[in-house]
Amino acid sequence: MADPAPRGAALWLAGARPKTLPAAVVPVIVGTAAVADDAFVAWRFVAAMVVALALQVATNYANDYSDGIRGTDDDRVGPLRLVGSGLVPAAQVKRAVIMSFAVAAVAGLTLVLAVSPWLLLVGVASILAGWFYTGGSNPYGYLGLGELFVFVFFGLVATIGSAFVQIETWSWLSAVLAVPVGVFATALLIVNNLRDRVGDAASGKRTVAVRIGDRATRILYSVALIGAFVVIAVTAVSVDRIGILLGGVGLVAAVPAIGAVLGGATGRALIPVLEATGRTQLLAGVGLALGLVLT
Image (tube, rainbow, N blue to C red; front, side, top):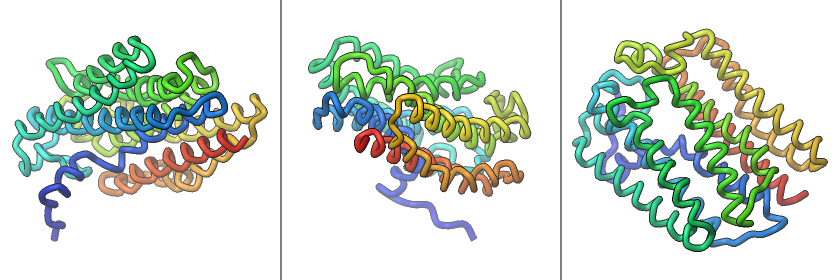
């Protein structure tokens, strides 16, 4: 017997997909830690975190809304979908999208006023990227570009931007570490799309997993995670900050996740892999941040 659907706040929390939130948290803590020796303004850190989390939640709700009204989520294997399940009217989910983007915008405007007007362009671009992932008449998520945009916005933009709001200038170290951070976030989407590959193909959603097939997607996921840890190790040695190797703690979750993917896990068996991928990013991100602060 299937578990009963959550209600009230628990239903909205499930729709926000909390297991994907490490993709928002990690770039902020890593970017901030990368420049902590030069500056740390607590309220700016909090504002950046609010922006990142609100954008992630808004994007998740927007994905739920757009896929739901298209019928893409009618036969979804993964976590609960608000619109596709019929539990929440599409109009209510759309309002949640707007409210979440509004929270991000308000928090972001405080940083714009305190740091630089250029952040306004970054914020607008991030909101547009969140909506048009599956929204609009020609969503880029349906064209196989989702992984690229995740890497850019939840890796490069978020990590470098979090450092920028602290020191108000470019940080090369945050830019280097933005690469593994972005790859971890991308791996979340890769395994998500691997799980949904058959259904996405049937509904016309041409994700990378649909385009390159099952075996290549599994290899891509594994290479992405391994490559992220290689970048961390090379960076630690190159800049002589061995503490950065604390990011390797993420291997505790990454190794079994890679094993499951290469072992042929499909459907619901990939849900724990998605969770392990989120843990990988969170553990690696916390380890990186601690290593940066302590060394």
